[in-house]
Image 1 (cartoon, rainbow, N blue to C red):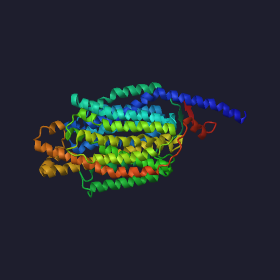
Image 2: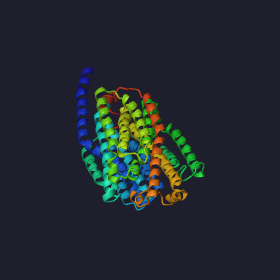
Image 3: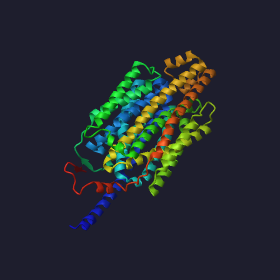
Amino acid sequence: MPEAEIGSASRPSAEASAGRIRRDLRLVLPGLMLAILLAMLDNMIVATAMPRIVGELGGLSHLSWVVTAYTLGLSVSTPLWGKISDLYGRKNIFLISIVIFLAGSALSGMAQGMTELIGFRALQGLGAGGLMVGVMAIIGDLVPPRERGRIQGMFAGIMAVAMVAGPLVGGFLTDHLSWRWAFYINLPIGAVALALITTRLHLPKFRSEHRIDWLGAGLLSVGITALTLITTWGGSQYDWGSGQILGLAAVAVVTLVAFLFVERRVPEPILPLSIFANRNFAVISVIGFLLGFTMFGAINYLPLFQQTVQGASATNSGLLLLPMMAGLLLTSLVSGQVITRTGRYRIFPIIGGVVMVAGLLLLAQLNVGTTRLVSSLFMLTLGAGMGFLMQNTLLISQNSVAQRDMGVASSTATFMRSIGGSFGVAMFGAIFSSRLRDDVAARLGPQAAEQVDQAGGNLDPSVLGTLPAQVQDGFHHAIAYATSTMFWWAVPFAVVVALLTWFIKEVPLRGGPAADRAAEQPSAAPADSVAVS
């Protein structure tokens, strides 16, 4: 057959394939959105219920670990999910990750102590890693980068819904039922997501021989855990020069150096270092790490400030987060639509970095006299900056690699942001606890600070309300001071993000998976690949 006839014959097939992909996306999109809602809703609900959880189970010193365990589990599992889904199929592994997440949710709701809760939250995090990677990889396979702006807007809407509904639902459950329902609420949502994914997601599987880099995964997990423990315990539970902290530092250095050594030599590394040779991918990865570090670390304590210092109920503190979510949703939707129409994206991360710095500087001014209106304006500013950054950085990351590397790019982007969040929550939690203890000692005396430590830092607002007015005032000042200090610490990291955005290079967005695969693949399928329905 002449070459012209071959091209003519292949074009309808490519167009039919693209049409089928779009139909599949419309069918499965609700299930994917529910899966993302699961992972995002959980953290927001738990953040709002945190004061009541600490009040019942005890231990402000353990508060950060309820979140750290989740983010740490997510971080260490993320690189593995990408490889395992390539080996055994995205759909099956995605469904397994949902089941693991739901099992962790049910067990967390039944926890009888802080240690149990932390362990079950880690299990939740393992499942959440598969949720995030699975959704991003599936979207990356089905939606061309140029058209991804519209989908990006939808997922920004899901993020906004989660961040608004999470505090509202968490506050309602905390005030009227029990904090345990902050975890049980995941079960019906997860059941619907499971049903939709099982019945509507039909992806072609390409089975090929893969090797999972178990050694690299183990070394990376040990190194990450050691670093997180350093940021959590350093300066609070142990002195920075103590044997425990120095020992953890040695473990972190040795394992991470060994990890880099292994990744350069194994045939299929768990985190391919070669993709960091791409300038945009390398810059976006660092931005993602710092974004997770700053955002998840600092924002985690806003509900505590609102419920204690500003006197809001758990439900109302959720409503008070609405301005932040409104700013995030608006800027994400606008930037997504503009990117879809123009194909240009570089300006949005730059704007986002500057606005994020401004928002953090404003939140660093929080004190006992800050009104809810003023704090809402501060949060609106921060949310606007986040909206320009969160989804657009993922789009740039996926557009920086070949279509065949979409799973690796998605898992690496998730890993960098989640590990940044893990470090951020741990470090800012240590800063918060240290500053709170110091200010309580200065205002109420060292004996009061010692009692706070012995009681585990019980900051249940209902308990604080029963204390004498002078003691309440001292605690309110201490909490406001600790919260403000956290945002001041976050500012330098946000400045680095703003500076790095200028190094992003405008690269044309690809046309779509079908076109990319046609360009990348030979006319005949490889002998070691078998298409499976």
